[in-house]
Each structure stands twice: as C-alpha cells, then as structure tokens.
Image (cartoon, rainbow, N blue to C red; front, side):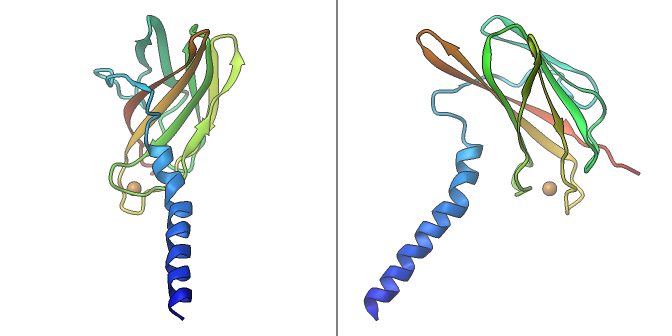
Length: 156
Ligand SMILES: [Cu+2]
C-alpha cells in the first residue's frame, strides 16, 4: 500500500512536469539567447517597431490593430539570414493558453504569420510579444529574443 502511494506521488510529479514543463520551457528564453532591450516608443498595434540585431535592421509590423479573435498579419522584415522566427504572446501574471506562432518566410527577408489572440477573461488588453530569432552561423546557432509590449483593442 505504501509502495502504491509512493508510486502515485511519483506519477503526480511526472504529470505535473509534463503539464507545466512545456509552459515554463516556452516562457524561458534559450539560455544562450541574447535578450535585446525592448525598443523605446514601440507600440506594436499602432506603428511598426524598428530595431537592429547584430547590425541588421529589423522591422516588426501588423496589418491592423490587434482585436481579440480577429486574425491579423504579423510581418517581420530583415535581411539577416535568420533560420527560424517565432513569436509567443503572453500576459504578465496570467495564463492565456498557447499563443505561439512560427513565422513563415514569404519572400526574401520577409517572415509572416496570421495571429489570432484570445479574449482575456479579465478584460485585460496588455500583452507581451516575445519574438525569438535563430541565426545559423558557421560558429553555431545564435538565438536572439526581444520582448515587445502591445495592446489589443476592443472589438466594440
Ligand atoms: Cu488575460
């Protein structure tokens, strides 16, 4: 009986790791990632954000203001030879589900993806977009992350 309880406890721990693990893995930047400072005056829903990674200019834009449940096109432009571009939308201190998107290269130097964000049950509109880039270099892969604040707008 004692063994069974021990086994159940162990199983509970494994289940907790399986359920919670990916969430924390997703939120944590790659340990080797270069976390760039958040660009000043960057309100992603109003105007494009522009900054640089390793001397390469980067432009992040949306084709429309972000409204919950309405698709919007997120576009990231750069001549840097990135191999992977992804974005994760989160709310500080609130579990908002999986809002992780892999951007697709649509033309040389342009990465794009359709973004849909859920409605916040608390009526909040403040999101953080964690954008991750992976750059393959002869010396190995380099990861970069920038976090951009953004506000969704009410549909009504
Ligand atoms: Cu929320």
